[in-house]
Amino acid sequence: MLRRLQFIILITLMLGAFPERVEASSAMGSPDSLSWLRRTIRGFSKIDTTYIEPQHYEFSAMLQMTHAYDVYQLKSSSGQAITFAPSPTVKFGPYFGWRWAFAGYTFDLKNVSIGRKAPKQEIDLSFYASQVGVDLFYRRTGSDYKIRNVHLSPDTNEDILEDREFDGLSVGITGFNLYYIFNHQRFSYPAAFAQSTRQKRSVGSWMAGLGYTRNSLEFDYQKLQHMIAAYSITPAAQLDSGLMFNSVKYYDYCLSGGYAYNWVFRKNWLLGASLSIGLGYKHTIGDVQSERRFRLNNFSFDGIARLGLVYNDNTWYAGASAIFHGYTYRKSRFSSNNAFGSLNIYVGYNFLLKKKYRNKQ
Image 1 (spheres, rainbow, N blue to C red):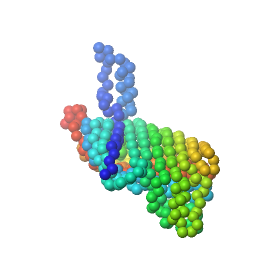
Image 2: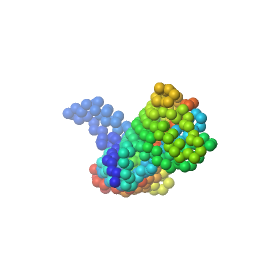
Image 3: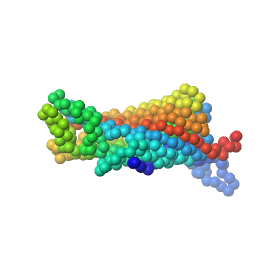
Image 4: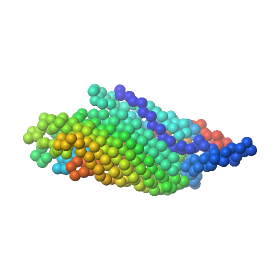
């Protein structure tokens, strides 16, 4: 069985370790600068407890199942289009958290022998504080893609190519998204996606952010052409020159804006959703058949969507969350669309009350 160690760090209350009450300088002389620094840092996690209930516990244990997906479409200027997607991966494993950090071990539920194919690598890190959030991602998809949809020419029988394995494609994605929550004192992103706080009243917030993505694509177009010829009953269609390349690298610099809303439809229940649309500047470098190198610089729109359903009574929590990334790269002769993300289903238990809550009880 394929196993992989995966670390996911969810920093939800990054500054929760700081005391909620700032001590005045004593006669021994605590520096004023230290008090100012503490007040400044506390401001990042300041919340309105009428709307948000903070975490009461030091530790948390959780079981999570993750379904990951990836879809990649290549399209030429003549209208030829091919969509690739690997078989879905489902992973399961335990997680353990202390205050703001989660670490876990997950393994694939399917016993898949991949032979010489490159192994998949997926690392997703999310940092959530009251005001800011960061998503970091590193993905290497391996070479176990299948042809999901193909359109080459009206005279080609294309159905016979669908769902056939194609090991001539390998995709790598590395990047981050940084976003700022404007209504951070009343709206809690961690309540919907990190379970470290609890939203008590429905509220929304505007968001603004920036991001960077590096997308590398290795494509054996000759292998695809041979595959088309092998399965064609009629004369094999020829790939357009826009699809005749071996490697492409995309660099995406993006500014985004969006809105998020947490709906408390029943006590301890929350449905959270957010959508951010970004204007990205794409810098592309690659090899094609007709040219030694080509460079494309253009603007296009990207998108990030999140959806979360949570039950949380401060001690027990359970729910599901999903995140979707979408990137487009377009020019007159060549374009691609990439969508990837994950669906998480989890159940967890918080334990060991923090000192201040033990004193209240």
